[in-house]
Length: 347
Image (tube, rainbow, N blue to C red; front, side):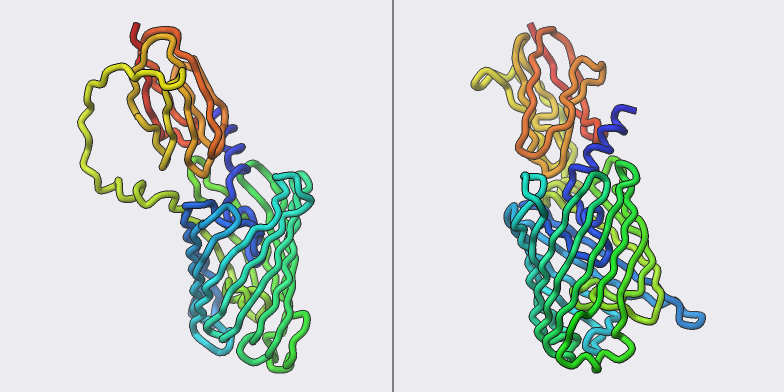
């Protein structure tokens, strides 16, 4: 029960792309440094007896705390009468409410190769308890390949229902265009409505929704169509290439190790790639062990027998515990129970 509660807290602490935004509005938050986010969305619609699909795939890489780079690919597109859209982009974070600022403020600079258009979105958001509001203002140098300079905008709302679950919705539309008549029947208000949620004990997030937008590029999500679609978006954060390559690593044989010597009064255990390093630590009685979190998600160090429990600590934070009694002390992360390790204390 306590582990579940910690997972709820961790869910709210993550900078998760799907739960930090509504389906058709952009979050004012760059990906964490060193993190690769792979997002994919699918929008399904009916055409007679056929089911049609408009997928969008996004890859984002965190370069700094305030900057990430990405590439978005969408197919079955109606932007510029092209089947495919390719949108390289950069996300910049200027202000964060969690750092005491009034708003979250950021920008997205992109180039849509399908429309041959330089695109820019200004993003702002603010949370009021369980309610979060967001607004986007978007400019396109060549909107939809036919409208010339185009201005679009929209707003979204998220309502936290539980630690994991949110109700989400947004509206977006064209505000002004040099040749607006070229849009024809595609000049409609775009809308989405549904739920978003974090998947317990994992870094993944997902949303399920109804919408009338087609693709998830800046231009594609800025207007509606005549077609009702049912969609989902799923996020896969790849926190480390080494973590994934370890799937193919041969098993290691346990080796007896002498007690670790304290450095600066403490022995250090590092948390990296969802693992404790070292996984087996031998220390002398009276040694202080310092647990340092290097992952972009919160963790705990929790003893199986309840003799110690760090509570949640985030990236860059640490927690220490002094081992005064000899014995074996297996422990785990309460948020990610598959993370296990052990401290052995000798006289």
